[in-house]
Amino acid sequence: MATKVVMAQLSPTMEEGKLVEWKVSEGDEIAQGDIVAEIETDKANMEVEAMGAGVLRKILVQPGQTVPVGALIGVIAGPDEAIDDLIASASGDGASASADGAGASTAPAEAPGDTAAPAATETSTTPSDREATDAEPGAATPATAEPAPDAPSSPDAGEEGRRKVSPVARRIAAENGLDLSGIEGSGPGGRIIKADVEAALAAPAPSTAAAEPTAEAPAATPLPPPRAATAEPLEDRVEEASQMRKAIARRLVESIGPVPHFFLTTEIDMGRALELRADLNARWTDGKIGVNDLLLKATAEALRRHPAANASWEGDAVRYHGRVDLGIAVALEGGLITPVVRDAGRKGLREISTEARDLIARARDRKLVPEEYQGATFSVSNLGMYEIDQFTAIINPPEAGILAIGRTEEKPVVLDGEIVVRKRMRVTMSCDHRVIDGATGAEFLGTFKAMLENPLEMIL
Figure 1 (cartoon, rainbow, N blue to C red):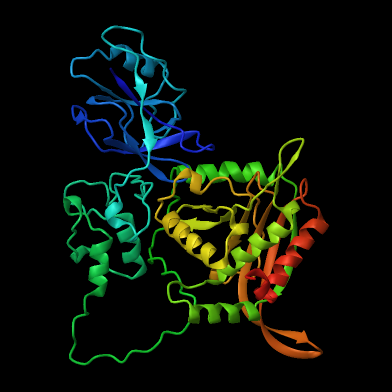
Figure 2 (figure 1 turned 45 degrees about the vertical axis):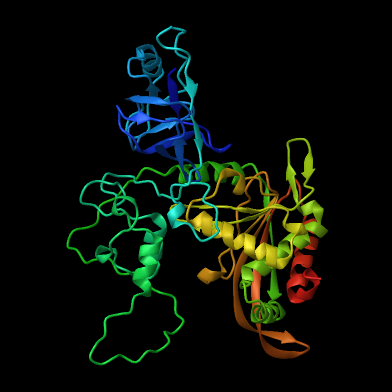
């Protein structure tokens, strides 16, 4: 029986997908459960798993093409099984899109009930363990982390003579300024994996005749490298938007237009919160608490005490959520994603810290599955590490609020009639006025501020 390989819908916002690469070729024997292709969705790269066995008889969509959800991209069938009618139905519906993503339409019709071409079954797109060798110890690997090779010249394209590097290894190497050209890969097909990069970083540096004295680098914001000087003006460059960027564009239009935003800003004294963090980190040896962990805990506890802010607009009604599912905005190359700490209002600081650290790490490696980044009831976006003083964030519908966190800096303030220097942080809350009124938002923000200025309250 023929098996249709289709572009599956992997998230509620996904309308189309981009075929990144085929893992197999026409004529290859396929077993049920084999990974046959990789697609780029609006949030992550996922792998297509064959739901039937046979031979990959036909590839209908080539790497780099974008087609709508449900479109036929390939056919698996017996070596002598008739598939002409199935292919013709796909061609008639325009399933084979042009390379720029245009010309694709809805899913193809079922093959006629012919004895030589029985009704086909669809594949499902599921997570796999393909990157298990690169995963953090003890961390799940529910989805592929491989970035989509957008052009044939991609270093991960797998062509002869080009280096194969896992995305985790490439990121670690880039963060440490490590040249990958001299590293031998120990992964499949000579692929450079995380262990290879870590071994290279751990290797002793070549000795020199006179060792240079070491000095701690000053804390300064690094400047981007200057553009190379050229006599000719640079030309415009147009790149096709990734599926993630397209989804972000759609969601922001849905938010900033229909959702009536208003903003509340307050300034918080972070002195006691930072002292508590230092004390906890001195006592806990199996993990470190970050400033962001304190912010998440304070947000979750404030939402638990102010359920009117943990709500969503549903047309003619307001849904007040029974638990706090807290979204954390995480920047990725080419976009962002919001992993969710589930039921954060019932979790302690340490539990939130551990869970958030794991979610953020796997989000950056693009290893989250949809249920880990969908369904937040409220979100937090922190740009303090970029030395941003204050900003406003756009609400992610159907949520009714989001906190925008600025940096903590030393400022002169008046305290008990005297000018003193204190560590201060500015926070702005974006509110959906259909759900949250000014007083409601102000009360929530006041509790959030009080907990950070008297942090023992949120851990008792």
